[in-house]
Length: 326
Ligand code: FAD
Image 1 (cartoon, rainbow, N blue to C red):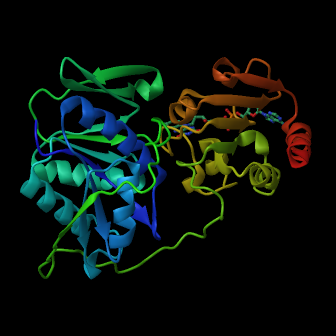
Image 2: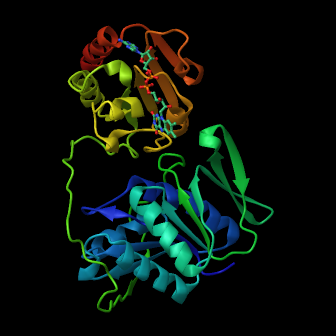
Image 3: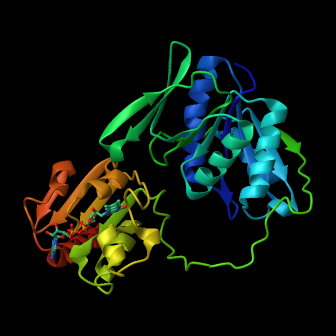
């Protein structure tokens, strides 16, 4: 192989997504084992200074594509920028985060480059000189190990929170390479209407270390307040089951599961959630699972590390009260 191990460093509001550092951690190990360079790719506008910091997270080179047309994410603009860069430098591997943006961009770039894409990977290893990706199938019930037979570059999206982050090495420098991007009329589709969601001020669900999640057992939108109070004490994000979303208690952006978000926090607290397979598909890779449910037979207890059988309306406020004391 040659051309380097590439990590697409997704950035928003002057910050990199946490999964960027996790991909750099995995990328560093691959690069060392395969004798490749570790390269990060930063796309945006006014991102040069931010890009240069990636040397401290193990990148040997950072490619920067900076242009006013790239100030905000568009599928067309970013796809053209990343695929042009990849054609010029022929990377061996390209990693992107399994985020909303990464999923969109990876699929389009893979199509452009005529290669394959291994999605939602939770493990990356080398066996007999080949890169082996571990990824869940059947809604997380089983895992497969996948290799690329021929297609190049090897492309994969990596699940946030699944891999350890790169070691921080203060003062370590990367070579920064600026690349140009020029777009023709009609290359980038224009946004004609924008729907802006209100930010909660809490961590992003897919990146959060702790998630407090509520299901149909919450019984109303108002009752989610007790989860928000617990979440704020813990610095957690708030998630939900599809039943809670379908009942209109919370928006779909909070849904965890097969048709919602996939999360892998250090701690997942499921409140009034039965543990249907489609919900487990989105959260069973959480490091520690705590379930609060009044039904001792609830399926969620089969995957929980700690279970509390009882009424969540008594237990959640008690937990909030106790955590406040810490
Ligand atoms: P329920 O199954 O109704 O469970 C509610 C739980 O709350 C019960 O276990 C009950 O004992 C407990 N409870 C009630 N009151 C209290 C109380 N006071 N204190 C403590 N416990 C209490 N689901 C998802 O979550 N995410 C998905 O992405 C998703 N995708 C799907 C895709 C498809 C194609 C299909 C068919 C289904 C999907 N579902 C998904 C739906 C899934 O099958 C379940 O219907 C759903 O997860 C149930 O949500 P729930 O656990 O909140 O509700």
